[in-house]
Structure formats: structure tokens, C-alpha cells
Amino acid sequence: MFELFDPFSIALIAFLSVLTATIHGATGVAGGFLLSAAIAPIIGVAPVVPVISIALLISHSSRAIFNLREFDKSAFLAITIPAIPCIILFAYLYGKMSSSLIALVLAFVILASIPIRRWAKKRELKANRNTLSGVGAIYGALSGVALGPGMLLVPFMLGYGLTKEAFVGTLAAIALVTNVTRLSVYGLTDLLTWEYIQLGILIGLATIPGNFLGRAFLHRMTNDNHAGFVDVLTVFGAANFFWLALR
Image 1 (spheres, rainbow, N blue to C red):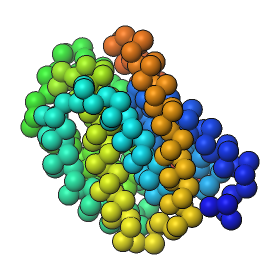
Image 2 (image 1 turned 90 degrees about the vertical axis):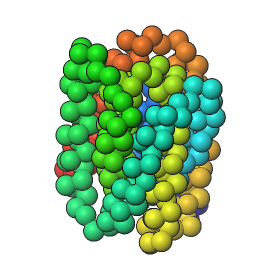
Image 3 (image 1 turned 45 degrees about the horizontal axis):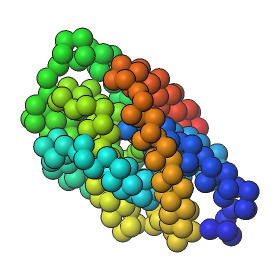
């Protein structure tokens, strides 16, 4: 790792990891694309997905533990069971797909989540297990090729009746399974090198204090403030993917 990056760059990456993890811990979403936007100019765009997948594996583990009491098993199983085979298939296809096209699709999907979520709230949408399973399959397909599709789950998980604490804890567990599955596929390819594995572990460890700080902010937020903050981050996430497409 130190052969690829100088000490200042590594320290900067660690600081950005703590900062974005704090936001991630307070909202339950935005961790992947915020971190990718922050460190891509430093490490390059190509290795971002595998490196952050390793980092988020550690980050989501700690965040799931911090929110273990609010974990909702029913929502977790309804989403992950159909998502896993889709993650495997599309992670395999990752290296064969146009990254620009993937970024554009994700940008539109993430941006569309705002009116969908507001429409669902206005109409008091009540999602059931079948709804979560259908969305889980789409989430799995998108998760196999890029970072950030957890935004798609937001209106449906909230429509299932989860509180903000249960939402954060359950989404952390879903993301943990997602990254384990995705990395298992990436490990069979040349997407991961030892240097990038080391960097991913460093970033993941740096996110742990950020998750702890984010948990403190989460308890101080009302459900309305939480939803509004997620909307702002959703716009930022869509803009980030448009930017990646142009790159």
C-alpha cells in the first residue's frame, strides 16, 4: 500500500473515511457513493468499487453491531434472499459492462428515489414482504455492478414500517451481506490486488469511529429531519454518478 501512496495521501484517505462514515452512520445510506466521491481522485476510479467493498464490509459490520437491537429480521430476509443470486450474476458481468452506462442508470435510479419516497409518504404506502422481495432483486442486480443502490430500498423499507433506528440497523446488515457476496465474486477475478486489499482494510477501520459518531447524531434527529437529510444526500449521490459517467 505504501508503494502506491505517500503517507499524506494515506492520512487524507483515513480522514475522509471517518468523515463520510459519520454521515453514513447518521443516515443509514450514502456511505458508498460519498466515500467513492471523496477518494476516487486520490486512488483512481477503476479500483474504487473493490476497495470500498472491502472498507464497507468492516464499516457495515460495526454499524450493524451498533444498531443490533433495532435489527428487523423479517425485512432483512425478504430483501437479501432474492438479492444474493442477482448480486452474484451482475458482479460477474461487472468487468464486461460499460461503466459510463452503469453510472447513468444509477444516477437516474437514485434521483428517482426522491419523488418515489415522497409519493410513498404522501400516500402512506405500506410495503409488504412481497414488495420488499421484488425491490430486493433489483437492488441485488444494481449492487453487483456499482455502489449506492441502497437508496432504492429507502422508500420501501420505510413503507414497511421501520423506524429510523430499525432502518439504519437493518440496511447495515443487508449491505454487509451484499459486500460479502460481491467480494466473493471479485476475489475470483483480477479486480483485487494485495495493495488494494490493504487499503480497503485501512479505510474500513477508519470508518468505525465515524459510525460511532454517526450513531450519536442519529438519536438527535427527528424522522422528518432524517428524511430531509437523506433527500439532500440522494441528490448529491445522483450528481456523483452523473460526474462518473462524464469521467
